Amino acid sequence: MQLANMRRAPPANGTALPKSFLGVGQRIVQREGVLALYKGLGAVVTGIVPKMAIRFSSFELYKSWLANPETGKVSTPAVFFAGLGAGITEAVAVVTPMDVIKIRLQAQRHSTVDPMDVPKYRNAMHAAYTIVKEEGPMTLYKGVALTALRQATNQAVNFTFYLEFKRIARQLQGVDELPSYQHLILGGVSGAMGPISNAPIDTIKTRIQKATSVAGESGWTRFVTVTRDIAQKEGYKAFYRGLTPRVLRVAPGQAITFMVYEKVKSWIDLWNARTPHVRLANEKYA
Image 1: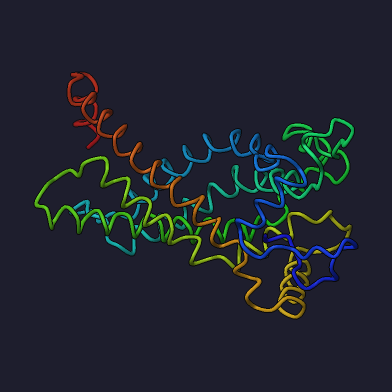
Image 2: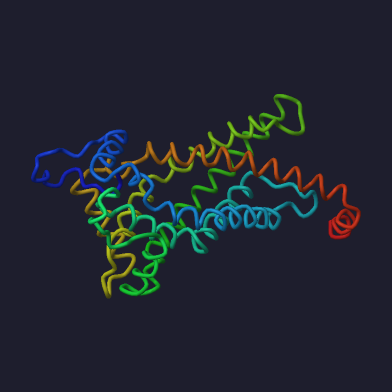
């Protein structure tokens, strides 16, 4: 949906492009097969584990740096800035190359059921190899500034809302720990806030990363050109195209992530408390 120009000339067969995400999904299945809905999955699966590891470890690190040195408490603004830092860190370390490869795979219009219809990029590894060979390794970092901005706003909003929701829920119920299903719900609600806050950034970034690199063209020039073209040719609503499926993707993912993170963290804390040498080490460096 983000890649489609709704105001371009209609195709030769006269079939108009669907505007709803269900219509787009149906069109993809009809033209390219059910497996086309999973294009780019290899890039996502390869990058998701290091992305989550970097996100949470960097967030906890930045949060500890921003904590009050006397009380150890972390203010809401400190959580926000720790989230910003975590988003930038994951964007530079893994998200940008993953997004470039994923978008190139998803942008290919080919049938997944016709063995004679061979795409340019066969899978994530082949896409990475081809991009580096034909366009240079820095192409994998095309749109890194916008990706960092998107991830930074995502995680700043995500962590801030989640921890605030969690604090309010604990106060209202008078408990120290929430049950897992509440972590699931709070994670889903907070996860939806990020895409809503930065939809235009994500649309511009997607258009930039889909295009083949042009020698001598700066990142700022690409940004201005893409932004102007969308605004002038498609209207400002086009910046929010694809928001519904993005929320439906991100919110459940964040819900599961926070629930699992909280549960695993509680297991680690319990194990540390029961292990003498670990407990002594923690007390030593506390």
